[in-house]
Length: 281
Ligand SMILES: [Fe+2]
Image 1 (cartoon, protein in one colour):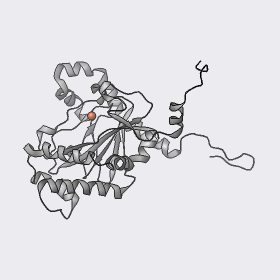
Image 2 (cartoon, rainbow, N blue to C red; image 1 turned 180 degrees about the horizontal axis):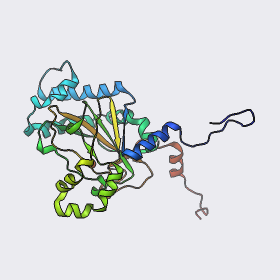
Image 3 (cartoon, protein in one colour; image 1 turned 30 degrees about the horizontal axis):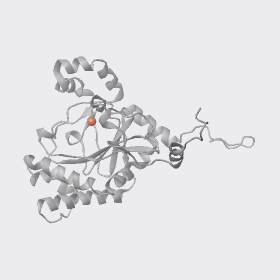
Image 4 (tube, rainbow, N blue to C red; image 1 turned 90 degrees about the vertical axis):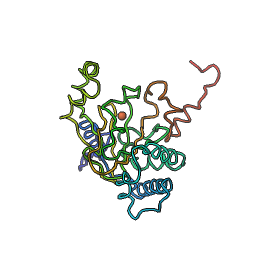
């Protein structure tokens, strides 16, 4: 803003300084970590998860939700883990408040980075990664390899503090650009294991304390390894994109995989408009 005795007050940029700072950080790192917009809602979601888990296990509610989730590996075996996870995932996704509440946690960051007219993935995924479990490793990949649109971000939300191998890794944009140049050859020669070894030194392990949300571009190489921290990771992830930006492969379309969540009135008016006969040209 500029103002003086001779000049009127003017605004020189369309984006606010806060939006510009967020853009710069996201472009440089490929991700941002921010406080959730509504901590009470996060606590409520986490407590809902604990209630469902306790009901499945037939036990009383714990005194400390975070401690209970961090140590779930003392109550659920690796063999039973997926069945347990899917039961919680299905129960949460059947509740009408779950997706709106999930969106509310990252709303200000998503609206700044992606836009205010959004499409959201139809279901929110849940990951539970217990210590030393080799079965829930997600090998290094870019989501675009699986016909996902590059016009999206992932909102990734831990229910416990995550760090080091209890978290996920991301290859920063500059290193990712280099890795993409020889990616095909690397994958053909040695698969994702070889690719991981090649870029291992450059990976960033994302530190996300409970109460914060991670928003990242899944175009960058990312994944996780065996969790060597003696605590269990619980995290949600869901995709967001601009409603009118391009969609990915046939299985990733609007209306099934993605659903509109914040369509603005004038877009509805425009989509409903029918010209009078003879005015089609
Ligand atoms: Fe991914």
